[in-house]
Length: 316
Image 1 (spheres, rainbow, N blue to C red):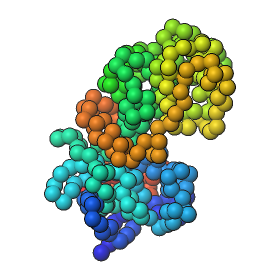
Image 2: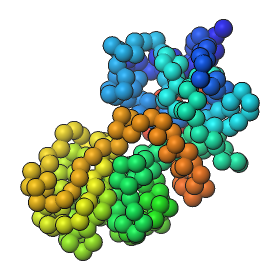
Image 3: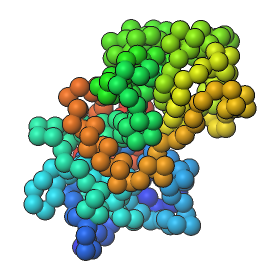
Image 4: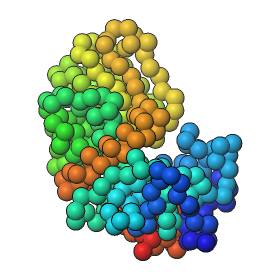
């Protein structure tokens, strides 16, 4: 039998709504009737062949796009699901996932809102709880706070007990909104004196955790500033995204002269089953989180694929 799906015919091509064979669950799998799946930067990068988790050698086209979504199990449970079995992605009428790749949705949580939240919320929730192991009252810096995931990171850090949150982002006009979301201080990334401003901030209240969504030159400036501040606390720098480019320059002295630890958070550095558990935890505080999104039917996937607005595809 066939189902409607967002089909990728070749890497770099825009997915189109077309018929694709239905997945067949194996022992230990769960068949999901998909309700919604979000078009995320992760999925766009996978389809473009630019993400380390997929490639022509291991995942040849055609395949169905989508790394995660929300839907119902055969017994009617409403769940988040992640990492469906290739070549069956989440953007289809049905998907199959191992039993440990699902997490329950809280009662009353709209499926489209859940689908919009899971990817950006997971990035900071997993980074703080599985990689940095943030403790109550610690100081968290968010590099890239004006992005959707970075903005959510402020709210999530606060919900997990951060004592002080410093937001780094572009555009001073956005500072009041970041304060409203829970930041104690906002530092603009613009200007040639960023490293000096970082040094001053770190001397006043050094970060215990840095959530880095942008990497590139801004990360270099922050690291240089931390080195000049001579921080002595065990700061954990968690690399999550690289929208400002890759690589960055890591001062050798930073690693020798401070107890800073550099690490990443994402698919591979956190086991997939743990990522799913982390998403389930984040969804339990969904009523405290802010996300802007729009919806579109699966039929319109090609038209909305490159939309600048976060878009959730609805299957029913």
